[in-house]
Image (tube, rainbow, N blue to C red):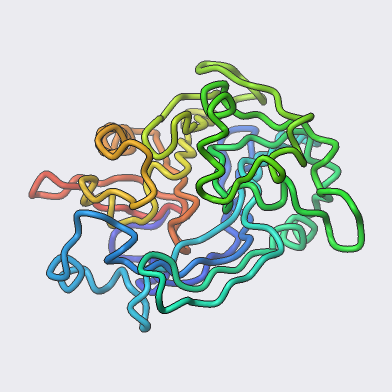
Length: 297
């Protein structure tokens, strides 16, 4: 297990790689789909130029904040669940006029699943944290060479509040037309529901109206897949820094603070799907009372 001193210091600003760990009978694997280069001063609200100067190690050589895009594969024997479906087969270059997002690309997930020995048809269900583009790409995009999304056979779990207010997602590009591509397969879930062995639903509203986290328990450990409650490891230290896309900034900040405390508890691991190449980790308390993200895989 990595410590605060023995992991590669380039990883928090590197493109994501496949990372795996085990929780009892469950194998948990991050499957990258791509990368987004965010513009830190526009992306994370509340952080000043001085803050970023003091935390320059979280930015790449181009002064971008790299954020991973991908999905979490949960396997139990022959069974498999996928949490979020990446950005899909799209790419967009940096627009200098956009103060928030630079370049973004996706499309790697299906090849990644196959390298892990999983065909898309072997995924029995998809669990969505929230209805934003970079979590839904392969839910509506056709697999190359076909006319259907790769998970068209699978149940798609979305919490009832998020699905009921799916009209809000259109503002971010998840239009009614795109959602219609998988709407017939949506099954709404409630807090506390077990949607796969060891995987339970929790509400974590703030980033979106019905944002969802998934707690995965196996052996004597639990993993909290927290979606977009946080977008970067620096928010573990500074949960007061919000995301410009947060639906309810006050609620989102409170949720980040609560989550960081949870991630410091014994036997608890976090999965931050946007955390560059350090997606699995825990929160370690510092002498000043704040926390640091410590990679564990």
